[in-house]
Image 1: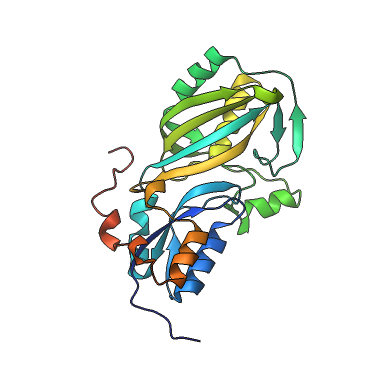
Image 2: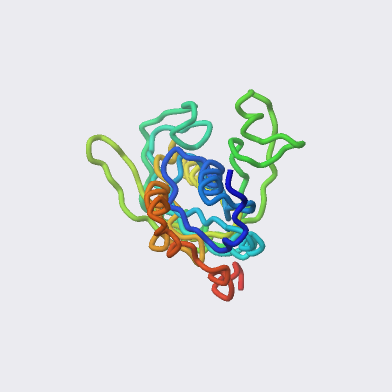
Length: 248
């Protein structure tokens, strides 16, 4: 095996594919580049796609700057079905034909902006007495998660699609660290007294990086074979002096 490459330092922004875990992305890049240090700034669920910023080498020391920055997501709710995970992977726990009232929905969205109390999903990586919450939930264990303060800068309704008997609504949000879109969807449905779950989720920005500065794993590996990938390795200082901290 070749010796570890200690000369690579910077940020690599991956457009994560559907079905991959954030850890799988890290492992692929780490093995390909043969580097000792690599990490990511903000986990994406396997069913989420989009911007996953990877810190290579000494860039790992600047991860905190991205973690404190604003994130932007687009997501779609399918109305009428609730699942235990709040997404398409979970078990159906309730169904209804009740659809959200558009005026009430807009009112609720307006009142969600700002610093809010949010309870994370039980199917999440948060630790409870040393164990991951999703492990406890999958094993049918009873437990509670404490609410925590999170920041929602903005939320807007994108479109509503009722074609082919599919009733869905899409949104875009800007939020701070520790924010769960699935929890937001759960709370919106509860306030509207309707069923719903996330069917699409994409991170379109992790300040200061966005989809325009990203590359898919497939394209990265192709460029790596041609030794033509380093234009995508952004300098460490890319994250410095560009983060607008939440609340400031």
